[in-house]
Length: 307
Image 1 (cartoon, rainbow, N blue to C red):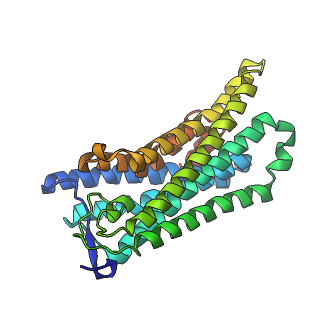
Image 2 (image 1 turned 90 degrees about the vertical axis):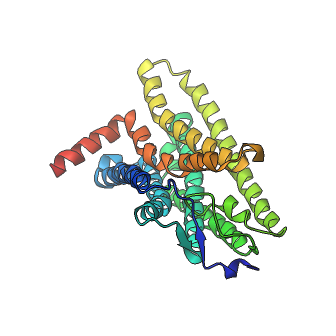
Image 3 (image 1 turned 60 degrees about the vertical axis):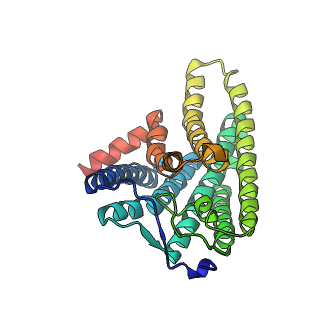
């Protein structure tokens, strides 16, 4: 095969060889997928329906839940279908679409997490100017910028990846189409172009992470000066879930793409891919609702309404 256009499909990694283990994988991923749908769906519905949650913080949380739903919907259903029907193939166009949408949702999520850090910084460090700085139009513009940055980043990586000539076999050692796995199929130096794009994206992620860290240094400096214990507790309850989500997402993704080649193995790559593509969308709703009384109350009202 001389180039990428010669590939009709790719062969994805299957989790197990026996039908029993494939059904176990299907059941496990189905449970995770339903949990992500339920958790993120409840947050979206609660924020949309409860006027008490029509604030910048919950507006951004609603956007985060939408991105989480999108990212887990890109990979998990395809993997479940492959296990259920005992097949591991995905079409060339399907693979390109999977790369684009996964890069889109993950990139937009990191941008949105940076915006959410700024929202918390303004709320705690500039409370008197919060209403002016975080007014509704500004919030919509920041959310739109996060989605647009994800789109542009995804377009860049998808175009670079699938314009590279591929002349190896079409087997991907992953349960979804992942850019590093596709680059391994290249037999030329064209992959350096996409590697350069990955470096640029990594620098942008690192820049966002530095911005978040600096924001929280100032936030915690202000919080520790609050004389009231109740005030400090409220501020920490607002910040710690966001900080936990950022730590989980950044650490897993950076390890997935920057780990040394000596540590690379099919089993480890599989575990890391699950950690950064499946775990965050599932646990994010739990992290955000665990210490948030307003969100808990809204969810209780929503559940009681349905009952």
